[in-house]
Amino acid sequence: LSLHYHTLRDYSRELGIEWVPMDEKRTHRVIRDSKAYALGLKGPLDVLRLKVLSWRSRLRFLWFLVRLMVHKKQGDFFNLSTTSAELDFDDANHYLRQEIGDEAVDYIADPFTATLHFYLSTEVSTAMLLTLLQSMVGNKEFSAQYPKGGVQAIPDALARKLNVQKGVHIITVVSASGSLASNLGSEARLPDGPCVVGISDGQEEHFDAVIFACPAPAVKAILTHPTQAQTDLLESVGYSSTITLSFKVPANLFADSTNCIYVPHVENKIISSCIFEARKGSDLVKQGSTLFNVYLHDQAA
Image (cartoon, rainbow, N blue to C red; front, side, top):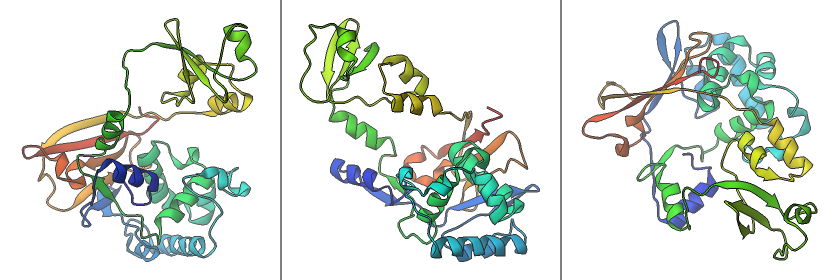
């Protein structure tokens, strides 16, 4: 997790979960012509050390990052509705090929988006990528940390504070809007204010709000009388796919500090990245072993 995930940090403090810095010597690498080149971008000048790129591409990429820092694009990666309108109508691949060239897109941008989202940069908006870069480059808060007990410790701690019921079959969710009365009948009595009713196996329960933590097609099947805005949102959602292969390996598999290996699509159409889990923290080493996770490109999966 990164330090600029402020909401998660606030929850973790409230729940008593400490975050600890990850090993600063962790190395990310990118494959080109069967060689694994170091890939680090803590600041703009680090671009000059990207031996995976030609000098021409490094200088072009550096000039792009400098301009991005000086002339910041309007918007917040954590709230893309604030992004300036001109960034909403182009994909990152088309934009970046004009700005930094094919080589940097193929060996930096595409491996990055394929690892984070399993999509190539053709499926990522310019708004998302530029605001993400702004949050990373030159931002001291962009620092990787790991929660003690692992990332799973946070939802586990939240769940302990909730009334969690498993195996409940939710048939439909109806918002307390104009069409609700006709759905429930004229005798339905509802609490004042915005209310959502969940109907489970013939039983009705009333809530202030409902959060759907399931794919959009499932939400469309459950949500009765959605607003037009909700319908538009649910119909616009697309998903990328991946398959993760996890290998149990010795924790000392790598003699150096390798953590993440990016595999560009131009080099391999199947594998998008490999993660050596031991570099994340001691929680991920058990009896001298750890996991080596291999992720597949969306198209391959």
